[in-house]
Length: 86
Image (cartoon, rainbow, N blue to C red; front, side, top):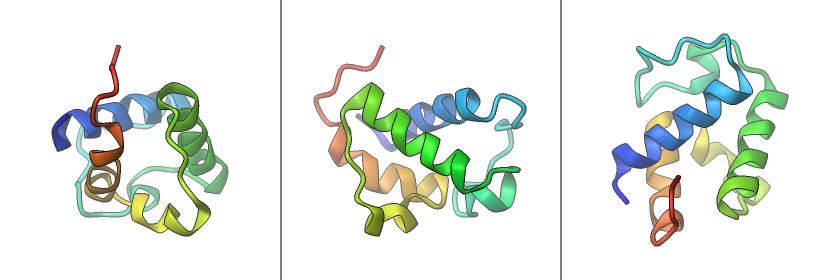
């Protein structure tokens, strides 16, 4: 799975968690919370969706690594290898 595919997964989850968010022009290296009107509960919902959909456990100490779209791709790509994406 590529970084771009992982970014698409994250964007799809954001669309579910924050349906009013405009994800069409997100910058990969800028914190998602700075670009979208997301609060800490929205972020936790993203983490919960990753667990529910893909069985990925993200320890609390790793949350900062998911702050940006690029960070999500970097952190999640190796964890999603071999996972079937529907």
